[in-house]
Length: 334
Image (cartoon, rainbow, N blue to C red; front, side, top):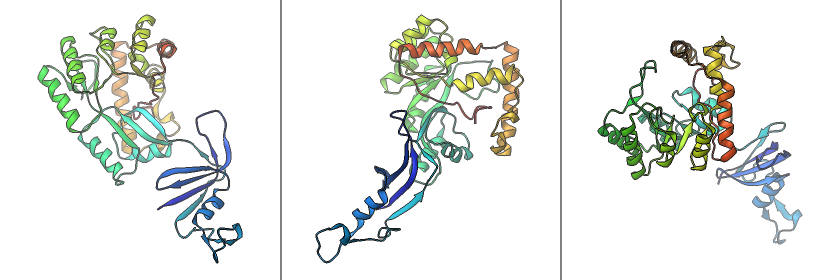
């Protein structure tokens, strides 16, 4: 049995707006067993042995206060705050360095939104204790139709029903939990994909569709809309999705970041923690950002962030099925 006590911390349970100051946390075999004050004495009493058969009188117990028979370790966290592990519900866990950065930010689980075989390996290594990082829940690759507006498009292109079958087989074989779609899949193929995914019990999430009515997706069981910018423009349509039971991940930060870099002259080195990224990653971000800026400007894509925020708020008027995600490591989102 491994046992730890964190002492004198300030605890946020997230159940209400209060903070439990100067609080101890007893952790046994990886699970929280007790929260309260002076748990050192509580653990000592549990570990103690009676002396001379005195039936457990308080002054007749003995133990080592610092080690409790070598089973308990103490960590004084005075002045620090303890919160439940955070979940980043939309990210791209594509580099080794990200694991430790997630944990440093309090993120202990992630919903990875483009997965290949190596992401399945990441997840298995994390569970086995061989990789430092958050638990990984992942989709497979991004599946899309032909879309020349995406620079250096590395998504998997769906052209035939056979491509749909291959996508489903790959997803299941690697233990991924859902299919992720981009919006340019042709309507008949999209319908076929949704039907086959439903038959296989695979949720479909992503950027909705440019070629199918959003209500058609909702009726077919489309599971989650990623990004406020993917929501339809009319309030009645947004309400339809919400009331149909669809989930929603706003990724509000990246929706605001894109206009900043594309149109408003913001530079990546201005980010507070940009210097904390590996040098190769900083170079990669700079290169990707230049391509994104060129693509958006050539297409004249200039979203009004007030409109985007308004769409997300409309969804939340009719549903509480939303998840918080960052879309890191998109350039600008650390």
